[in-house]
Length: 238
Image (cartoon, rainbow, N blue to C red):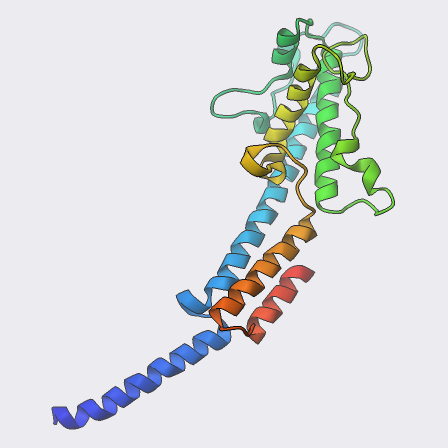
């Protein structure tokens, strides 16, 4: 009896395994055939998460800037009167505060510097995020790129712009880059963790699609299945 059952059962198992393999290859299921789609989904979600984080950080900066603007205009503003500092400007090691840069530069902290410095960071963040998302019209995009934002003098009231050959230019540059690194995070992190303007969102999506197509060709022996073609097209459209 066992011998009679073994033959049909083995045939059924073989057919079942073949059907599962064919279904997985057709629909992109399983560890092997689902890998290209899972990888592309993960990279896309990470990219979206980076932009969402910057948007949230920008909201915190605007709240802080609003609080600064609400301070009395007819009397001196002391540091103790400032609103709660944005959480996005804090790390596990320290709180990144503009007043620390005044100390480093030898200039006295002034409220106008705090207000101007925070407005400057907000403008730079808008420029970086807007450029990344290609929110600006092509004919105006160059004017609003992060690299086009003037080097505003934050630490010295008597000057408007920071000259490239200024002795304390490095402190002003560190102020800008240090703030932006916390606010923009992974969105503007280049090779070796250095600050750099990231590729536009759609350009990064295109790169993810190109990698996914290559992975699919490797997985499916040269042909990109219909489900993957449809998935990548929908990802680009969304």
